[in-house]
Length: 379
Image (cartoon, rainbow, N blue to C red; front, side):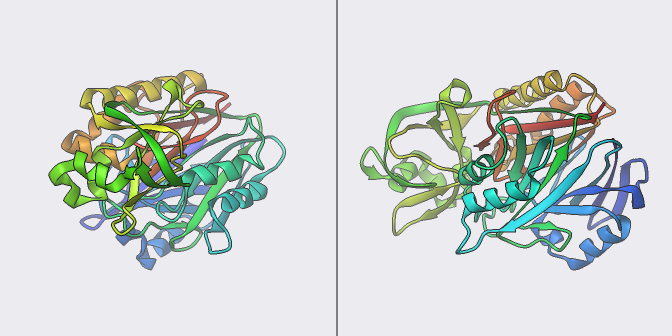
């Protein structure tokens, strides 16, 4: 596997930052950038000119990751050449007639093939129910296929997210690539680092990823009580206090969910994934050191599973972590770099949701507020 990277900023234009000058030999390019930058058709034309033969997968972010740096309002392009591994790309749209689960099924059917090992998914971050998307994928894919990826972001705006495959990205789209054969080696895990606090609450009314009532009371009203003066900044300030919910498939029986939008009239909150009626939830708060430790642990477990030096690390971390850690956000990237070593190319983005298993042989789940690490190399 060979890689190279280009970084676009308004002040510098395109700069080659690392790699082997792949140009025509590049097969796949992962492009993570701000919504405003990716909407510019000239930027896509630039990328197509740089990599005329490659498939371009593009997604908007709440922050772009390159090496141990986090950028806003930029574009990170990471080109890949697989020396021994076949791959395939696919895309679908979310429409009135096709929901998130159906989208997952369509993507899986397009990628299903002999010796499929890994599917990386890049999804719209607002129009998609991530839990349903994963369910759709697994209804078609074999259980041993590893799924990782993330939901596109839009800074802390929660207005519009963009995803594209070989074209200028647009809303309500999901794209993916599949890797095949025995030469690809993978390491993957998702870990948070948040702490639960406050009383445990029972979800007494919900529909899919929309929460209406906790303990028989309007959910939004109760949530605002906890947020206090920060409630004026909803939904963005909800990233500081996500919900944990019990889940038998998750480590310590907990998953974390982040709010995407609120409905004042219905006093409801829409989350990135399902909030099942009858489950118990608690508010979460950040412990800075534990967030960094979570990133380090995710890297260590991924490296252990990979069992080799990684050529590429794709990091998907939550926008909530970025808001909490603020100017110290790069500490979690430095923790990753310390584990994977200097030779590994690091790319990624801050997301509205992360897709990954907790550990080997566990199914992929939708997470929020985690650092998700996907390591790749070829043998």
